Image 1 (tube, helix red, strand yellow):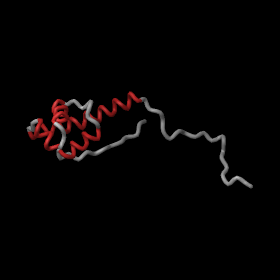
Image 2 (tube, one colour; image 1 turned 60 degrees about the horizontal axis):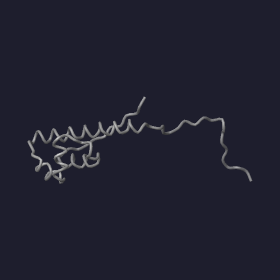
Image 3 (cartoon, helix red, strand yellow; image 1 turned 60 degrees about the vertical axis):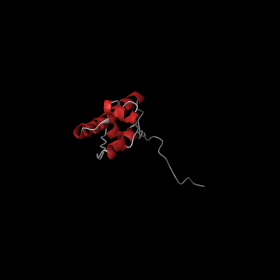
Length: 100
C-alpha cells in the first residue's frame, strides 16, 4: 500500500506562535486595564458622578465603584471594565498590531 502523503523532512517549519514571557503579558494587560479605566474616569469627571451614581449606572457594587473612582484597576478584571465602559456609554474598540 502506498503512502498518500509524502513529507519533505528537510523542510524547516517556522513556529506559528512563539513563547511569551508571562511578565510581559501581565504588563500589557495592566496597561490595557489602565486605558479602559482612564476612559471610564473621563466620563465620571464629565458627568460629575458620585460613587453611588457610578454603582447604579454601571450596575456594580459600591466597592467596585470605589475602586474605579480611585483609579485602582488592579483588582478589576478587563472584561468587567469593558462591561462597565459599555454601561457608561462607551463603545470599546480593539486594535491589534503585529510585532516586528
